[in-house]
Image 1 (cartoon, rainbow, N blue to C red):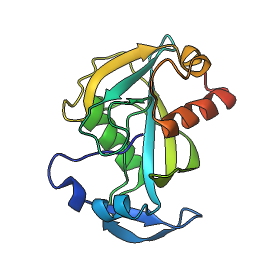
Image 2 (image 1 turned 90 degrees about the horizontal axis):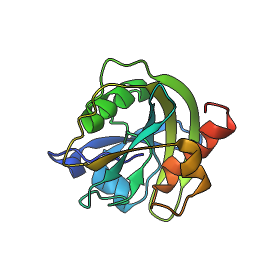
Image 3 (image 1 turned 135 degrees about the horizontal axis):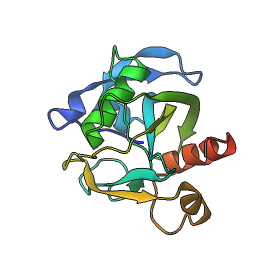
Image 4 (image 1 turned 60 degrees about the horizontal axis):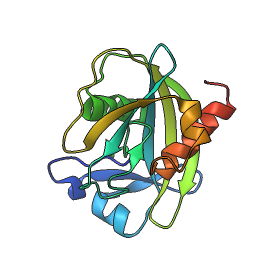
Length: 175
């Protein structure tokens, strides 16, 4: 995931807030969502090459959630008034410079830990084109075999929500 930081007024951005069943109950500034650990919506877009490799990112050290971790999916929070599909395409373009690609919706999942709570919607896409990472969010882009990632979880520090979603993609037979 994962969580997206907008370069301008990131903490003032209005984020969709949901209940435990993923029903929208309102919106709040990102700062309040973070500080009070309010449950919100997030998108996860897993980028695969046509040869089955996973393209993912190392998060910058300035990210407010899991700085410096490897995020296996492009994505982030769903803004107030925004649908999952729109947010997924927006985040993919903002973070990785990928646009005009078919996004395959896969599943929703609930994630909660000591720092956050969200309902994620997972997408996959196949992309062999150029990746243009956003330097404010992406320290570097990495390509690796998804089975190798799952077999060696301690090899890198992965964001736990994107790792969980990748496991589910594997269990669902996506790769």
